[in-house]
Length: 132
Image 1 (tube, one colour):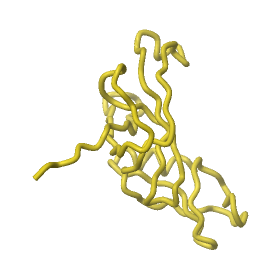
Image 2 (cartoon, one colour):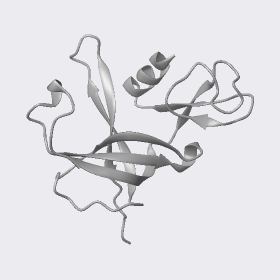
Image 3 (cartoon, rainbow, N blue to C red):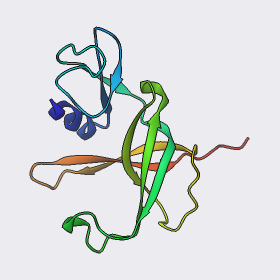
């Protein structure tokens, strides 16, 4: 089930579930639709763009693998191209940066091909507004 999501990340794609019966979007991965309870919601590619819904500056590692990697900023990102579902991730950049609710962010795929098995993560960075 979640294998497709991880495979999508390895290919540089953000995949989320969308029910083929009622068209509801959902996250996290499930065997059935949260709305109509149909089985096996489809995996659909969406743009890795959203906006910060909430955030927290993390000072203490939440897992032993993160020891020595703090502080960092955890963000809850709302995806408008996927029915407004929200997912948690890390905000790249200075951990002391000012964070604004509603700020636009874009996904950055962090690939780890040297690992066994290889994997990829989706991180977030503030979207730069181009000036003309």
